[in-house]
Image (cartoon, rainbow, N blue to C red):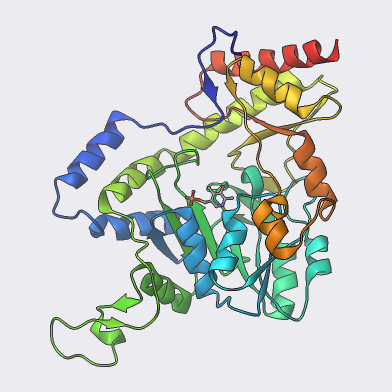
Length: 391
Ligand SMILES: *Cc1c(COP(=O)(O)O)cnc(C)c1O
């Protein structure tokens, strides 16, 4: 039961301004209702922001993962390694391609896939890796790249949480999405993510062959580019060269995406401000494990996850909901989803670090539009809950 007078604070939500709305309205007055000129402009803006050569915008982040898995060449008989602590889409895209997802346990400090655990899951069938930058914390990409390079594996970064994150390596700073240590990176523009297009997603890459493949897969495998066709029977002629999908994004969504991208750095600054307030507010709470940011990395802080060392996660969750906080749990380990357990024989205990993390984790609110009063209320509500349940 909700006994609080505080207005509900969700764990994450979009921030749409009048300027965003005007940009969408303007796009709606143009002749372009599906793909138009704004798609390429948005793609170039995202590619430039990340430091990648190419980008292909699509209908959602899951579609981005699907065409990335196909462009990587994953197929029947192949195994692809990903993290159990992620949204189901990171593993499902491997199944869409007809290949087999294999999980490797997380690093208990960062909650990202552990490169050592990846080594333990390699087999002659391993064809690729899908590291997930969990909560915005970049994975150890140089280490994963080393594992992949020696064995000819493809890497797709699931960066749905991590636009704007970066990491240092050998004196250089790399933005997530630059694909400096991978073949492709995907982002999601779902409203809970950093920037939104309603539904939407994108794949970045530096590889021209992959780029062309992604363009085909986005729209039925069809090309209208005369330079790429085997025949040209006239101006009406197009060719289907691969089995693709309708994963197109619309021009008016890209109009919104372009406006949102202009504010991404401000959004990130506000997220980091709130994170610092949480770090200060929770500094003396023995019960809590706060998010860890690995040295030489900058997290994009999509989520702020607390682990409770001794209290019942269910009790904490219920108390915080009573206090009108839209707390959540990210994520139920994918290998423990009934579909995965029944189809592939996974069992409780298979990934101890992931399962231990899951048993203690609660995501508290974090989004740029949160007021300072909201932040103070969240800190008080968490501390009060610890006192109440410890009594
Ligand atoms: C949100 C998300 C996706 C899927 O993105 P959609 O745009 O919702 O399809 C994939 N992976 C992770 C880790 C996500 O958080």
